[in-house]
Structure formats: structure tokens, C-alpha cells
Amino acid sequence: MAGWSLCLLFLIACPPGWAWGQDPLQAGPLFDDSKLTLDSGYRTEVLGPLFYHQQKESESTWALPPLLSYTRDPAIDLTEFDFFYPILTYDRYGEQYRWQFFQVLSFASGPSPNEPLRRRVTLFPLYFQQRSSDPAEDYTALAPFYGHLKHRLFKDEIFFVMFPFFSETKKKGVVTDNYVYPFFDLHHGPGLKGWQFWPVVGHEHKTVTTVTNGFNETQTVAGFDHLFVLWPIFFNNHDGIGTNNPVWQQAVLPLYSFERSPRRDSTTVLWPFFSHVDDREKEYREWDAPWPLVVFAHGKGKTTHRVWPLFSRAHSPTLEDNFYLWPVYKYNRANLPPLDRRRTRLFFFLYSNTLDRNTETHSGHRSVYLWPFFIRDRDFNGNSRLQVFAPLEPFVLGSHKIKRDYSPLWSVWLAEKDPRSGASSQSLLWNLYRHRTDRNSKEVSVFFGLYQSHSDARGKRTKLFFIPLSRQPR
Image (tube, rainbow, N blue to C red; front, side, top):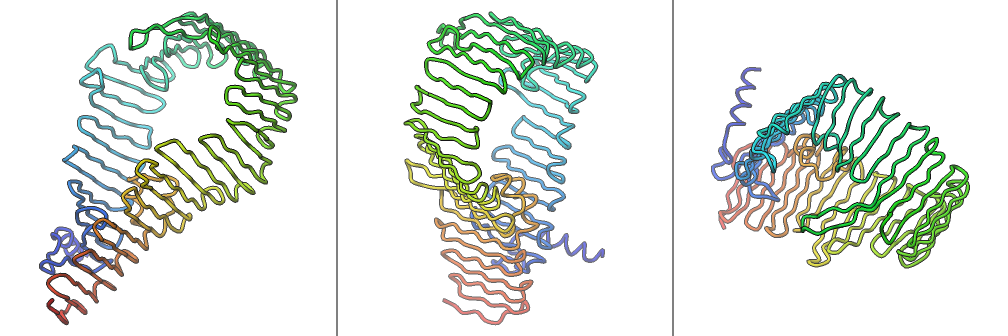
């Protein structure tokens, strides 16, 4: 065992090409050292998917999938370390860093736009702490007893004592005092006053106010008046007060609900069974019975024919959404120049074919997968990659950490091609069979490297059982 360990360490430490002079050693899946196909650099693999080291331009990565991985790129001052991702991770970019354990315990530090230094400690949801070079940004919170937070949990400020008995939140100038959250609160702000005893009754009113934007221009902020009784049974809301499109919404559910405004009217009887919409702004009319199962809409802004789950065809000037025998077949398109995205799916996420096209350059990016059997990707430069199998990749498309920490474990077949450089490679069972070509050379390795062939400008070399058989000069 000790001898094997020493041998393994020796193989890991060897530089590319040590055993062949100018040719890298290929004995996959025990050991393989080869050039990258889609990037400039080398990749060394030991014992199939259990260890690899990769040098891609200035980025260096070594990993023991799925246990841990370490990546460093001094060109952009980047460091990443994962231990059984996503259980424990450490990420640093420049002066910013963050490490977390189970997304529960985390430490973060680095400058912010207004502070040269900011440190955070979080033991979610019990303890929150921040220390900053600006003392006004410091806070400490120990839930549920006492705490003060800033710019956390989607609020500008949070203060609480024996939560949920008392808490105060601030967001965009609106202050909300909660007593036995979420049942009773009082809130106030610029032109705003309100209260609620949820779910029994609640009322808030805001008058029309003005603000000065970043261009020193005065802008009007619309007012509103909201009332609910026995939420969600009855509500009566007026929005857009002081604008050219005031909106009145009222409902006594499930008897009726309606919306009235200069731009749009809608009426629902026996919600959600019978509805009618007249949208004068987007120029369409819609009938629902019931929504969203049966929908028919016609007009310039929207056309929909839907009887769920049998079929649906819906489109607007920029969007399209169709399905047949949902979820057997589903098609979506978003035409938002310069992006034109089209996606076809079968049985939810079992099969997916997504094409993103740049309408200005006419280049495209296509991603196709059949879960869990394969995933194929072709980027805007024409580089393509086919991987068999892919149980996680379809659910986290574009995640470099899944590709780095987990994909090597089940990539029994991997094919890559770069049309610009003319390089291509194919690997079966972690390089038990490997074939690579470019404009200047061709390499083949089979069954632990017992058969190898290498052709380039110097000629063709063949080895059987690591014994040279021929050399054909060119």
C-alpha cells in the first residue's frame, strides 16, 4: 500500500510529457496527461475520475471529485475551494471573500462601494454580525432575543426584541412596526399611514408625494388606498392615485372580483371560473373559464388558445408559449433583440433543446440534454462538448462547480471539438480509450495505454505494451 502511494505521488508530481520526451504519458484510466481541446493548457488525470490537475491558461485546478477541489487564477486574483460542494465552500475574488458551511454558517469580508472594509458573520437564522470601517454600518443580532440588521433579508434595516413579539423594519423610507408578527402592525412613511390586524382587517393610505431623482429632477410618486377585511375574502384597493391611470380593484371572493382603469378592465364572477379582460393598452381581449385552465385571448398584444392539459398556443409580439398534452411537449420563445431564445422540452426536464441566437452577429449557443443520459453544448464560438452521463448538469446549467466537482465521476464518454483550432478529442471510460486530433497531430491510446499511436510532423510512432514498434518519418 505504501509503495502504491509513493507511485501515485510520483505520477502526480511528474510534469507533462515526462515519459515520452515530447509526447505526454497516456495510460488511462490509471494515468493520462494530455492537452486541453477547447482551451490552451494541459490536464492530468490519475485513477480515472478520482484525481485530476488542470492548467488552463493562467487558471490552475486540482480536484479529488467529489471530495474537494481547489482553483486559483492569479491573473484575476481568484481562489475557490470546495469540500463536498455545496457543503463547505470558500470563494475569494480580489479583496472579497466568503466561506460557508451548509449555507447556515458563513463568514464574508471585503470592501463595499462606500466602505474600505466590511466583515460579516452569519449563523442562519440565529446570529448575524457585521463590522465595518464605517461604525454606522455595524450591527449584531441574536434571534429571537435582540438584534439590529442593515441591508439584510430584503430590508434596509431590521430591529427586533423577543421576535415575533416586536420588530421594526425599514425599506425605502417606509417604517413598519410589527407586534406579534405577522398579526398586527403599524406602518408609516412619506405620505403613508397604515395598520393591519391580519387576517381580520387592515387599511393603509398614501397621498401623492414627490421625490428628486439623480438628475435633480422632481418626480411624482403615486398615492394609493388599500383595505382588506377577512383576508383574502374582501379587499378594495385604489392604486395610481395622482397619475393618468388610476386603478380600482375590488373583490368578494369567491363571488366576484374586478379591476377598472383607463387602460384595462377585468371582471371575474365565481372566482376563478368566469373572467373577462379588456386590455386597451396592449390591445387584446381575454375570456377565462376557469383561469388559467381555459383561456382564449385575441388582439395585437396577446393571442391565446388554451384548454389545459390538452393544448395551449399563446403569443405576443415578443413571447411565444405552446404546449400539447402538458407536460409531454412544451415550446417557449423570447424574441428580445439582440437575443432570440427558443426552447423545446419533453416531459418537464426529461429532454430539453435550447437555442440562443444573436440577431446582430447571427452566432448561436445551443444546449441539448436527455436526462440523465447526455448533455451537449455548443457555444457562440462553435465549440462543442458532449458528455454521457449527466444526472445533475441539466438542473444547474452553466454551473462551473458541478462541472468541476461532480461531472468527472459519471462522464463515461466525453467528446469535445474546437472548429477554430481544428482540435477534437473523444474519451471513453476515463481515457480507457482516447483519441485526439488537431491540425498538426493525431493521438490514440487504448486500454491503459497498452496500445498507443502518435502522428505529427516528425512522423508516426506506435507503441504496444509501451514498447516502440515503428517510427515512420515524414
